[in-house]
Length: 129
Image (cartoon, rainbow, N blue to C red; front, top):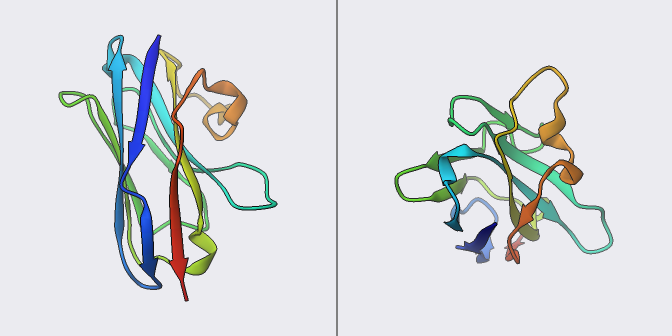
């Protein structure tokens, strides 16, 4: 069992930056592949970014590519999402998610929220235009 707690959300203006953090406790963090998802009002939850358990492989949704950076500090048991040049379309509740030991392969499973076993409670990001 692993517990995930997100932080770092807030209200910002378009063009600003935020860094989200996801602190993990419980079992060995380094064995977990992780992802960031978001859900805007009236919309389905969507993948934003994902990272392999080693941190060596990453994925970004097209909508955030070049603006967001995911990273994983296994020594600190923390996942990060650096978000730059935010716009109104980034407004959503952001969730971090984890799954133990799953290998990145050609199936792009990491885009599917159903493949993750553990979820945080979410942190609100609101971008005013």
